[in-house]
Image: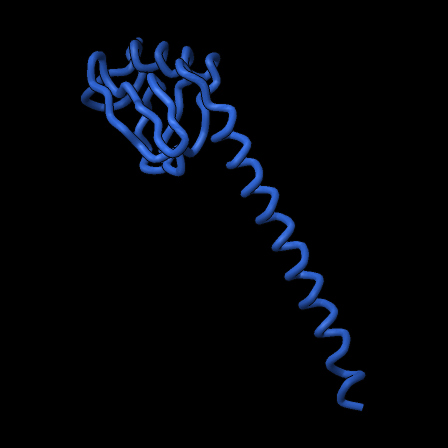
Amino acid sequence: MDLVIFLPLLIIMGAFMFFASRRQKKAMQATIDLHNSLQIGDQIHTTSGLKGTITGISDDYVDLEIAPGVITTWMKLAVRDRIDSGLAQDDDELSEHTNDTDGYKND
């Protein structure tokens, strides 16, 4: 009788664990695909929030230009995402119209 009570609970927990692991595997595969598709000239964000342009790539490391003439070396695992070129242009346009002291747009 006790097995009949716990069987639905075990099935629900098993289904939850199955779907959670599937989601995690998909996220891991997306990260691996991103790291394999990186190219010189791509603009990226790191996991710490740094924005840079890739100037060199090896198996485990990328060289990022974070300011004109300033190149740093990062592990590929630190690359969080690639910045779309359209999004990067919007960010540049927004920064041109932003007041540095209060963060609001100048009119």
